[in-house]
Image (cartoon, rainbow, N blue to C red; front, top):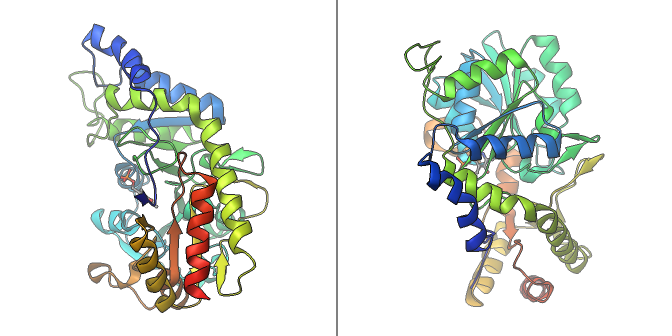
Length: 359
Ligand SMILES: *Cc1c(COP(=O)(O)O)cnc(C)c1O
C-alpha cells in the first residue's frame, strides 16, 4: 500500500541514543536540553531570528493571535487546512475569506484590500504546500492599513525566499512538525518572529505565563515541546538534506511524466524560491476525473489525498461567502504520494495509472 505520505523514521538506535541523555537526567519536558538543542539547530541552519519549539503546529497560531492582541476580523485564505481558519474562530475572531490565485493556490493579494473594514486586525495567510505567498505585497498592504501579519508556514520547513528563510517574514510565522510533514517530531511545531519583544510575549504565552516558578507575567497556555518530541526531531534533522534531494527527484519525475497532458495543471512555484517539494498537487479538469483517478489508484493500493478539500468557506461553522476559485480548485485537486521511501518506479506507475484513467 502506498499512502500520500509516510513518516520518515531515523534508525531506532539513533533515537534511543539521543533520548538517553534525557533518561539519565530524568528530565523529559519543560524545555530541557534537547528542546534547546533542536531550536538552536533549526535557528542556525536556516538563519532564523527567534524560534520557540511547540507541541504542535496549531497552538502557535492561537498564541500568535493572542500575543498580537487581535480582535474583530482576520483576513484569511479558504484554501488551507482547517487549523488556519478554526484557530481564528477559536480565538473569538471572525475569519474573512479572500479567494486564491489559481496558479499559486495562495491568497490572491489583489483581492485583499476590498475586504478590509474598520474591524480588520490582521492577515493570516498560508504558504500553500510550502509555496511562498506574495510576502512583499502583503507587507505593503499591512503597513498601509495598520494590520498584523501571521503566516501559517506549516509546510515550509527548509523553504527560502529571496535567499532568506520564509519563516522570517510576517510578524509571526508558524510551522508544523507533525509526522505527515516534511520535517517532524511526531507531533510538534514552532513559532518564529524577528521581533524580540514579540518573542518574549509568545514565550510567556506558551508556558502558562510563568515568569519564574512562582510569578506570572500574564495569561498563558501550555504549548511546550517535550524532550521525547525533540529527540525525534534531533534524530530526523541530520537526514534533511537527503530528504530534500530525494523529494526533488520524485517531484521532478512526476512533473516530467504528467506535464504534457492538457487535462492536468500544476502549482506555479513563486519566483526566487528554494522550494522544499513538500507536496505534489495535481489539478484535474473536473471533479469527476479526480474521483475516477482516486478509484483507480485505490484499486492498486495507492491512496492519494484531496488536499485541501473542502474549501474552508463552505465549512458550516465558518460561514463564509462563496469563493469561486478556491471551491473549484479544492474539488479538482489531488496530492499524489510523495515521501522519502517512495521510488521513481512507483512514481512512474502512479503517473501511468493517472494518464491511462484520464485518457
Ligand atoms: C498540518 C497543518 C496545521 C496543523 O499542524 P498540527 O501540527 O497538526 O497541529 C496547520 N496548518 C496547515 C496548513 C497544516 O497543513
